[in-house]
Amino acid sequence: MGDFSPEGLAFLKEVQARISQCNPGHLRRFLCWFGEFDEFIYSDNDVVALMNWEELFPYLENQDLVHADYEFTTGGKFNLREPRRFEELMGAGSLEAAFTAGHFLCHRSPQHPADLLAALAWMEAHRDVLIWQDQTLLHVTLLVAHWRVLNLCRPPHNWASSWAGDYKDVLELVRTIQVERRPISHMHYSGKIGNGTRPIDELLWSSVTPKERNRRQLWALLRQALGFEAIDGQWNRVRRKIGERATRAEKRRE
Image 1 (tube, rainbow, N blue to C red):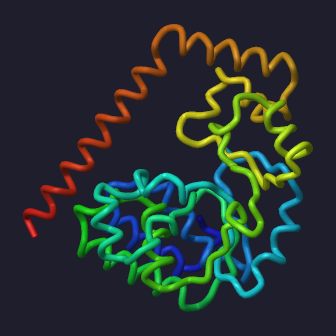
Image 2 (image 1 turned 180 degrees about the vertical axis):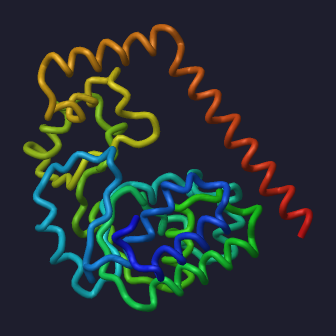
């Protein structure tokens, strides 16, 4: 945190105060706009690289943001409480502008922080339509500020999905790349994928020793067998419900 400018830290503090329902750590991704690079890649730490990411930067030419995911197929369910109402407000195609905030490239502009705050103001004016999180803010920003965006998973590039949940095992991943000839930039283990109980989770442990891999897998399987995973899932749902009710209560007070 200390590597960023006072301006960047002040921006983060404001965003955290205005999106208090979101995990503060998730909002730290916005410090990228106050770093030392005009072009950067942001990546979550549950991502495994499947190519040399330096090869992605040429796609940033004439773009503000480049990503590679299939979030556009979800109908906005991970960002929005009322997707159809959102589309009415933002226009046709606005649901398909969604992207996964866990991995993207950006050619930053001095205008971008102001764009993010303008999108945040739009969110505050339409609280009940949205799920209050960092990814939603980026989705809204693309639309409010008309950022130029390229999704490599859409035509004409047609890259394969970067979400681990779309693959049953590593063999399917290899077939997609080598037989179907479809590039995959990275594997994202979001949404509780990557806990060590699925065959596709193997990539997460490729850098550790066999002994450490076995230890981690044994612990993951024990947690699953004892029901701890189910308990965690229930607790997360309760937390989301509490957050939603807090947002509605705040809206009523206004």
